[in-house]
Image (cartoon, rainbow, N blue to C red):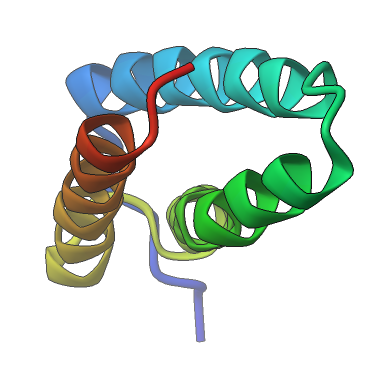
Amino acid sequence: MAAKRRKLNKEMEAEMASAQKKVELMSAKIRDIRDEDIQNEFAEAFAQVSVALNHLVDGYRVQGFCEETEGTLFLYRGLMERFEEEYEL
């Protein structure tokens, strides 16, 4: 039986690439914080955002464009928005 082909989506791929760059930039900014307690607080809060993005990228690689990856993208957006509102970098 032939393997099912993944459905791809250019807009989602572009948004994931942009999100990966943004996560890298935010992670670098967090590592640049000198106060260790504040750095740890920011890193802990940002971990959810990073995990959501990694889950999205892995899911898209395996499943392609589907309801699950769309939902994970929506989750990532919400977590990033909340992080940016609560933590100023």
